[in-house]
Length: 389
Ligand SMILES: *Cc1c(COP(=O)(O)O)cnc(C)c1O
Image (cartoon, protein in one colour):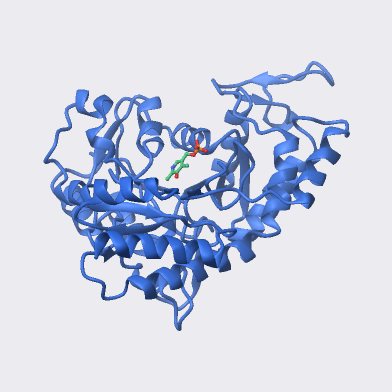
């Protein structure tokens, strides 16, 4: 069977974990900081905070930014529900906004209309998602956010290694902290870098960085400079209500080892995408998403990180079932978040975001992972064309 995504664990990965298992630290050891530094270097950010998973990373961000019952935060319905749920964890309101049908990314013009229809201060933040690995043009979103006094959390779970070219002609990697206040990543096995469970927040903001570190460990500080009192070497202070959102040393060892191969994996994903592009180009009945213009780069190279390769067809259910019968486990990303019973209970309904709902009706993610072989990909293409044709 061929899944839509799968992790790749090598002997070096296994050795790295085993070495940590035999060391003095299973949880908060040297690998945590090492992974954070390596990841920060990889995406070009000043600070990185590793944590339990991508959802914990999102929650740490909304906590650090002070989201509360008065907050209204704009995000896309075409994402994993965690992008929205992190606002609800803090009691805030999720304000969904429709997608651009060409890219399935949050439509900046619609966000602008929303912001302009309310007084300044009505909304407090934006959570754009680099959906499928296609980078959001964060320079444009930053400009809009600044005009309206909003913060930005970039959900970059699909896009480690992705980038766009900004108006100065400079490469801006997803999560590099230049335009977003905070960016988050996940190391779930279907993502580019796998640690089992795992997540990361990146930022260039030192104040937010320190806040994330405290919140990750119960709101506790051990830094004498930050404490109100000091009774001796054992002393620490819990200064606010935090959580245990730590990631174990063992998993960070796996993350470091995986990160060493991230660029090769990314190159392979892009290669697979080119083959699909060519195979489906001009085929009637198959729609393809467009890459953000700024992420196309300056030549053939692309900044798209291809977590997913999405096609759009009229009979999606038929194609999904047909592929399964032939051992190909394609997947749907995503059921619009506003149509989940939980969000319907909060007042959302069918028809609220027609572009997202149209997109959902036809989308299917085909197998996309570095170890997908050429033969397997050819078989997938053949079966898709067979059904559509
Ligand atoms: C995977 C994912 C998450 C959540 O990450 P977990 O590590 O599974 O908690 C959040 N947002 C997006 C877009 C994701 O793909």
